[in-house]
Length: 222
Image 1 (cartoon, rainbow, N blue to C red):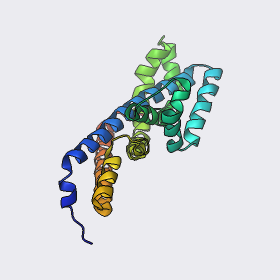
Image 2 (image 1 turned 135 degrees about the horizontal axis):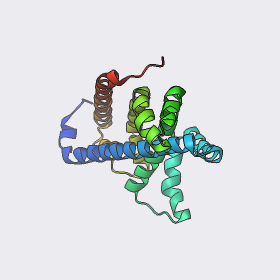
Image 3 (image 1 turned 120 degrees about the vertical axis):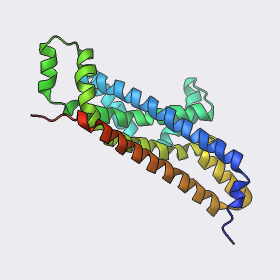
């Protein structure tokens, strides 16, 4: 038995399509997760004790259960509550909700790390809560949350492979099918590993570049 890359080259249209679906779900899911997570963090920060407790419980459940179980509940459990989704939207919703729980904790820790004196100064000059978030909290917390956010982006990228379980036509499902049909499991899995490794390296490089560019805006607590 020899390693034959030509098996994969002959299937390049399907592989490109699967890679495109993976990247699309990853990017859209990450954006949705970050937005929802940010809104959850703001709500927990300023919404009062009850909202904080409710959202805290939701975050605890989402962080305490495997993503595989969550995606099963979204896809197979959806019809029980009138939510009959195709694999692709179910996967996108699942990865967005899963990531939102982690992003909310990242942003919340960033909010809490901002010196209280800065917030009190904003209140003294008459800024509203929304203005304090936009003009003080967001700029100061950006550097604090950037490294863990990049790490979360990488995690969500890898979790896209789980969506093959519910037949989302992403790259893992595509290459697994090719490997089964062509008896080329080593070639297929090697290509899959290389794909994710390249994405991780590119994401890490972009994260480091962003951190370098934003370093001049770093705030220190006097």
